Image (cartoon, rainbow, N blue to C red):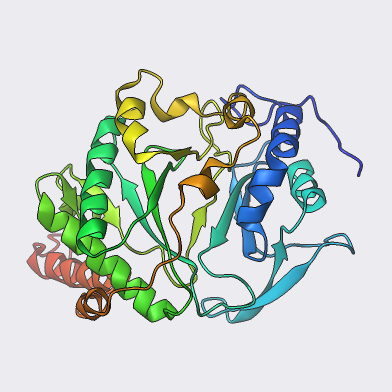
Length: 319
């Protein structure tokens, strides 16, 4: 496969070249690809002189690349996604300057049966990484109380992702409901620290427990680089080492495309740390179905507040 322009900077602040990206993905391909395989792939590409952009529809793929068509309700059209099932496909994307790799929680051959549920823990701007760690511990307590277990990784940005592997029997709607219930239960454990408020102005400086990574939503894959200063990588961390990452001066920034191949040392910690697949408790699912979908609720609340502001606004003296 021809690789081009390898010595160009990857993106501003990356402290890496395109060659570094290709070398990194080549080094971790045997651990990275299994977590992408069989799932419709979305990537974030960074072309020279352009802002980063998310690409879902793969255009002009090579004849050997596997693709799958998925109907997109929002755009009312079929979207052709790549399936990154092998090293060659991964390196093809690297040559396209694809830095981030996002996949859904269900495989293409079973789109209505998610393999995991995910809670995305997002600390407020300016907060130390330790705030995300503390909120992750709340989620772990909520999981344990429900008889569940999960694995945690850095997001590669400022937060963490908690993954809970499922046994494949739960439908998308039930997995989404269980995710909402877990977030609500974690919030109740320490409402001064964590919140499920989707509207940013309602969070009051608390850590956001995002329960919307369900259905067709995607999440950045373990071992994926991010378009962030220093080119950090989303990296698995054992629960008992989260506090060390949070207190370390380097924090999650210690995981970059320069350091991760050495840290892996031929292992796949994401697979090693992931618990066995689990069924969803019926009471958790039932509770979740009583909780409104955060995005929908926020949309209606936003409209209500906008209408209220328009009614309270004084008449225009120029009219």
